[in-house]
Image (tube, rainbow, N blue to C red; front, side, top):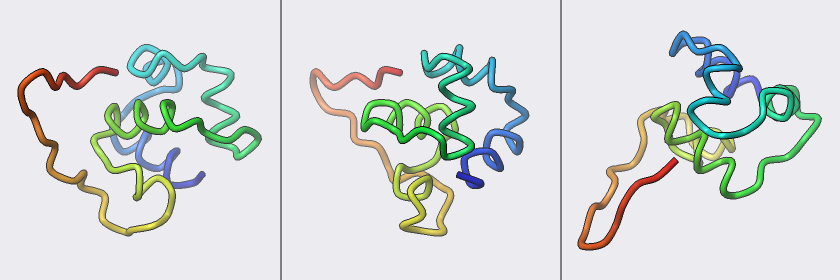
Length: 80
């Protein structure tokens, strides 16, 4: 989970700030960063939105940090 920690630090966020942005308890977030706990889909989604990256980047499936273009259509609302 070094990508997760690296991105968080690049953004200047603390784990407490990530808790505020994602709703993931700080102690649980710490376990996600150290690999002691696995993400749920919803947690990964929230973290990707908070860090302005893609879920694929966090999962190590791409080296591109920029998120994919988000679609916004009728009734679609991005939530954290």
